[in-house]
Length: 204
Image (cartoon, rainbow, N blue to C red; front, top):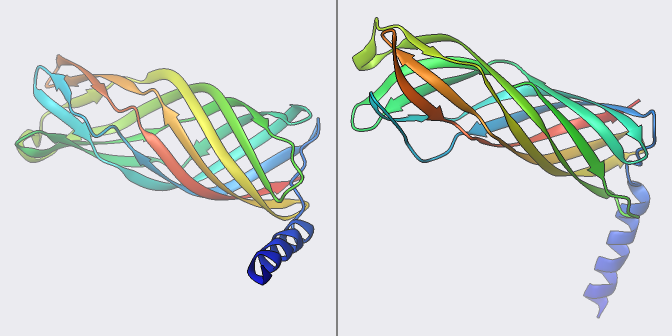
């Protein structure tokens, strides 16, 4: 009984010490974070064989403007992600860099605790560049087309003050690119990553 009472008291004190990060129309937030992008574990079947893209982590930046109470439009940016591309049974045969700017419409749930969950959905544009053949394809031109797709987002803000929060979030991005090797189209490579990360979010 004493343990339950102590836990209840601790929870109440936490809520008082860190009020919910309320979001009203006209508010803006800036988030500085680190995210890991993990492409699908499955291989894409192409004319060159079965290909898979590896994961990578990079710093990220988000900006959100609230068009209504609890409803915001968020833009996600990042420093370039770098990936190796594996050919099943052979090893890494190419590398690339990409940027995945994403715009999402998000809803932040109202509650009386220090935790504010949110969900969102939007559009992702992925631009690939600096592609190059490696390993068995060293010296062979490799090209990946830019991609458009939908994006899903969910997370929780843990308020540390009325103006700041620690955010834990997860995203899914629909990314599929047409690949060319040695000037010949080989088909589509599905990346479809799950993106997980943490960020420090400031309201102003």
